[in-house]
Image (cartoon, rainbow, N blue to C red; front, side):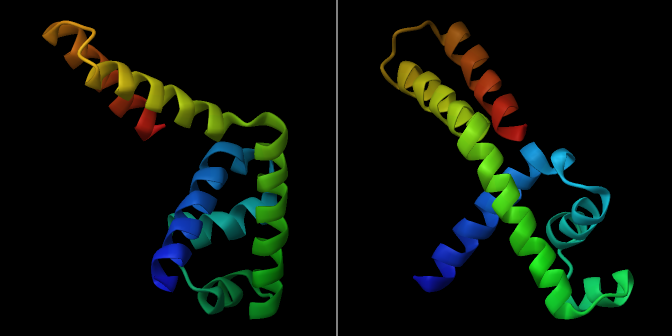
Length: 114
């Protein structure tokens, strides 16, 4: 159960990074890229960046706080999630033709990729 919660948190944090990572400074962005996109450990990032493992962890924690603040203020991830749920509910209720259903499923899949 704990592993599941940790993975969900890391996935959500990765989504926040994907949406708002460009708003971080260059150093924070690079550390987060290595951590989330390259799946590197804190020790590996420490060796590459020339800072301590604790320093890497501190950068990740501070960056995640910034990303969470952006989400709290802008709510882009939450809005997209609500849109997806609305479209999926519309599809499930059978209120559209097969052609429309296929088009909506494609749109939902495209949005999920973003």
